[in-house]
Amino acid sequence: MKKYFIKTYGCQMNQADSLVVSRILDEAGFKNVKNLKEADVILILTCAVREHAERRALGQIFSLSSLKKKKRCLIGILGCMARTLKERLIDGCLKEGLFDFLLGPDAYRRLPEIIENKFKNYEDRPIAIIEEEKETYSDILPQINYEGIEGFVTIMRGCDNFCSYCIVPYVRGRERSRPISSIIKEIDFLLSKGKKLITLLGQNVFGYKNIENGRILNFADLLTNIFEKFSNLKYLHFLTSHPKDLSFELIEKISKLMKEGKLFKELHLPLQSGSNRILKLMNRKYTREEYYEKVKYLKELIPEISITTDLIVGFPTETEEDYEATLEMVRKIEFDFAYMFKYSERPYTKAREIFPKVEEEVKQERLEKLISLQNDITKRKNEEMINKSYPIIIIKVQNKESLGRLPNNKLAVVKEELEVGKEYIIKIIKIDGWTPIGEIIK
Ligand code: SAH
Ligand code: SF4
Ligand code: F3S
Image 1 (cartoon, rainbow, N blue to C red):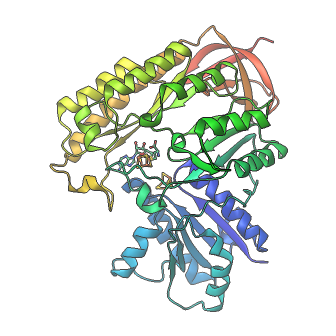
Image 2: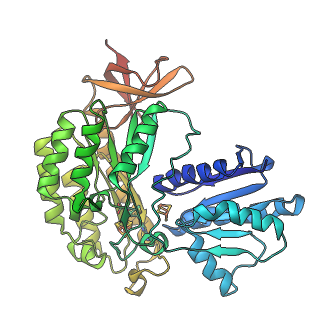
Image 3: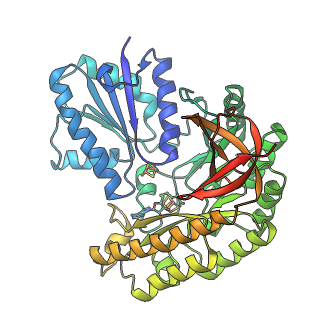
């Protein structure tokens, strides 16, 4: 029986894809191993979103080439870097022999066949398949080979938004949604395997759209269907959401479900920039005012909601004034948490043609200042929870400590061994670094 090893980089969608890959290989008679040295097939599931992510995966690929000299094994590169690597291979920028095959995110069904073929024709040149199919892997249940009570369900693939900085639409193809029935089936499967906290995944879940029985079903319909089917399901979560597609009607729907405890009281709503001029250049299709109004309404309906975001500094042409506008939004909205990035130039994207670029030192300076501002806010927001009590659902127990999620989806630690999957009531007694520390009160 051939053994395979998978190393996954990138976002949760890649993590979810790795479970689809696992299922495909397990069904074809392969065996998953956790140790790279035991494997006959080494798969690297890559991310291309920023240069840094790409460099990390490339480093890993280069370090594997020595292994190939020692034993007969295959190295396969999957995921979002497949397209760029294929092009580099064709134009000769990348030497052959680093890997045996390249498969884009929509070509994973071909894995067993390709592996077999490559073992037979071991010395052949690398194979590269980047299919632009309407693949959704709807009929493939993910392999559950990980511990814990958190489960992820990809509800849509690809992206049609073409934010001008972003490579995702070029490497993951066009947006397509999975039928509700297959999503329900997968949730059912995850619940039957002991998963309790389900996260729905998509590049923009608010763009979910599927036609069933002649009716167009959107994200709100999907939520309705899920909760009709699983009336006891609590703390559902979804990632990520585009602010342009968050209507006031959807805000009302989501906040109702949050109040009922069906959804975590958290929304990840990437702002990217606080400057209207930059937002326009980014092709984000909303203004800072519109974004602010939506967040304000959400906070009115759910005052304890946690709002998290993504921010980019140093987008081409960003001036001090544009950057200040981002800082101002951060101060005004007070995000609970933010992922902050320096703009990174990506192949195929429109932003490549926008000049002048912002100098590296300026980007670094802007990032550091932004991180420091946001860190203070994150800490202050967490400190607001001190002396308040919350339910907590335990997701992990390690070193006599329990880690759990609060209703706002923040992680908290209780310094005793509790039961994974069970809910307790705790009081937050202090903030350690950023982490809320709680004590059981019931
Ligand atoms: N689909 C998701 C985001 C996927 S990428 C969404 O729209 O929310 C995750 C984050 O990476 C983005 O929100 C953005 O902040 C950041 N990002 C994407 N491309 C980038 C680039 N070229 N440079 C820097 N950050 C980038
Ligand atoms: Fe990229 Fe924008 Fe699509 Fe998100 S919505 S994946 S940032 S193009
Ligand atoms: Fe990276 Fe692809 Fe996700 S580029 S962020 S792994 S969609």
